[in-house]
Amino acid sequence: MYVSTVHSFAQDVIKSFPEKFTVEKLDTPIDDIESLELISDIVGSLLSEQKLQYLMSYGDPLFYVRAIKNALNNLKRE
Image (cartoon, rainbow, N blue to C red; front, top):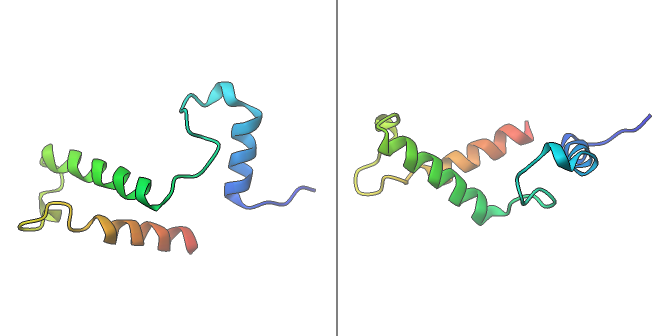
């Protein structure tokens, strides 16, 4: 029986079947800066499409990006 974490299992699957995964950077997880940039891009895109107007903060439209990242980290830990 093979026991692993979800992340380790997923990484093994990706390495075993690389032809099924076409994203370039799959061999290493993204770092904190990359994850903040990704969340910022997603939030910015949704704000520009007016899908997250209730999330917009006066003066800084990306004010909640760090809070979103922290919430996602908490969900992963739980």
